[in-house]
Image (tube, rainbow, N blue to C red):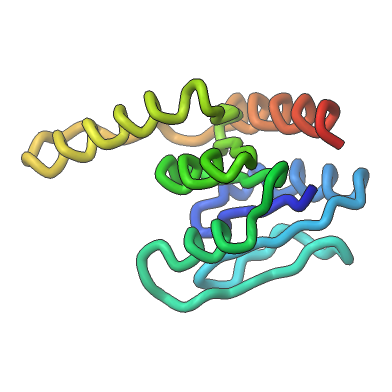
Length: 148
C-alpha cells in the first residue's frame, strides 16, 4: 500500500500524526501539492510538486493511485475518483469514504456549492481543532491496523 496525501489543505495538526504512522509502518508515502508542503523528514516520504492550476494535484494522485492505496484528502470529488479505483480515502476529520457513502457526500457537497453559487451565505465548515485531529488519528490507526 502507498499512502497519498493531498497536501494543498492539510491541517498542521495532522502532520505529526501522519508522520508517526509513516515511520512506524515504513509506509511509502507521496505528498502531492502545487506548492512545497512539509509533513516531516522521512526516507519513506516523496514530495511531488505539480503545476499550478485547479485540480492538478488531484489528477496526479488519481493517475498514480492503485487498488488498495490510501489517500488523505478533504476533497470529496477526489475521494470519489479514488473510491472508483478500488482505493481508500480518509478526510481530515476522520471520515472514511467508501463505496457505500461517497455518492451521498458528493451529492451534499454539490448541493451546498449550488446554494453558495446562488448567493446564499452558508458559513462553511467549522474550524478544524484538536477533536477533529483525534478523530482522524483514530480512523487512520484503525484503517492501518486492518490493511497493513
